[in-house]
Image (cartoon, rainbow, N blue to C red; front, side, top):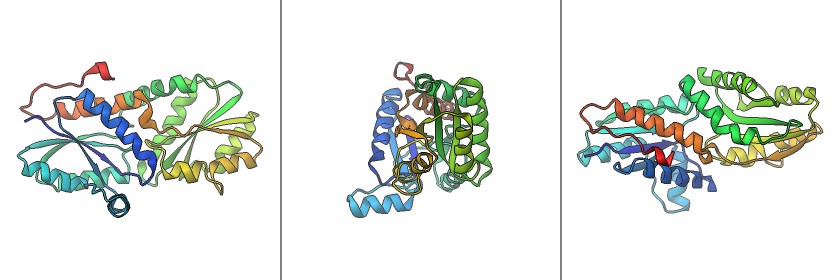
Length: 267
């Protein structure tokens, strides 16, 4: 039997779940010989869907045990995380406790090649922005050592793109005030605000664009004109390609299997 692929996300309670459908279609097309399943690590998300939508979502452990009962010896678990932070390592612990053997597909930002591929994935959008407009990409942030992903990305973006690109986070450094101060100091009056998040869920709706104490209101309060692009990263073909490569890498460490790589015509 072909090794099944489990796409493991934290989940969302908003319409941003449509991003998962978009990714799902691409993964199924790229790995047509493999079963593709979804698991959601957030109990809150699973309970919300059960109570409000009558839809039962499975956690990673539950799904993997079901695959084991069906006779699978191995599964690939692709972590749908931006960085290797708390959520990723909790997922690893849950997966390791299951009876089925697993190969982990790594988060979006793991290797130097991932960062380079991400810059190319964003190039079409960032290069289209005028030189008189600043760009701010806002991520979740973290108190995990993986917080260093954000300044590393800031360094690489600054070297790749001529115009003003800033990385902001909801938690941790750099603070919103620091980022806004840098934009104001640059003299630019217009800002394009983008989520550095896989899906444009509640954080985008409330923390980036909400009517109170959001990035948009704070930027406008500093005299800046703001345009919000509320597109989650899972809608970027180049980002999907990174996850496809991570799935392929996970498949390749599994012994005694058919040599399957994803169909690059769908990349």
